Amino acid sequence: MMRITTLFAVLLTLASCSTLENIFQKKEKARITVTLQTHQKYCGGARPTPEMEKGTTAAIANGVYYFKNRITQDAVKATTDASGLLNLKLEVGDYQVYMGDKIDLTFEEFYAKYKVEKEGYENESEACFRTYYSLPAWEVSINADTTFTLTREIDCYTDGNPCVNYTGPNVQ
Image 1 (cartoon, one colour):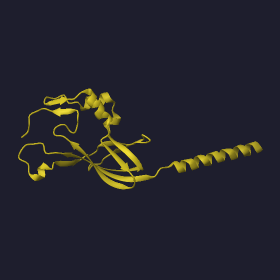
Image 2: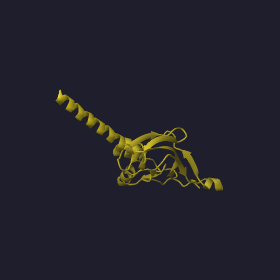
Image 3: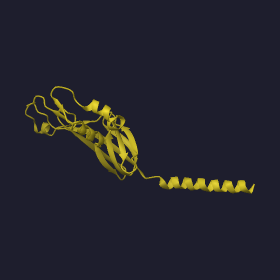
């Protein structure tokens, strides 16, 4: 009986230490509200007004992104709503934000999807696509509850893909 009581006491002590360890290891979380959008400069055509020269912004609607913690490498998947908005609760820390295809697709699938095989376009080397595949869209630091906007700059006719060059007719 004494052995059972001692064993029970040891197990109870270990369980409570484990629970305390879990409590102390919990990290502070922050609520973030993020708007994801694109900005495209004026791409030619008629003489632009001053307003047109500023370019246009558009919500990244229903976009899938991953917030990857730089220390733990844990990734949180999030999808924007129709207005480009998403709400998350993340541990305080530094994050790299990746477009979903860079996490969800293999490099081969990504390369096949993003290289452009049309007249008027030239693709850079496969090495360029490998670099593009490996880089985050943004890097952010989360310190407290916050609201912010992330803007992706996109070039004319290439949707922001740095490994595709538009060589087609100039629009003037």
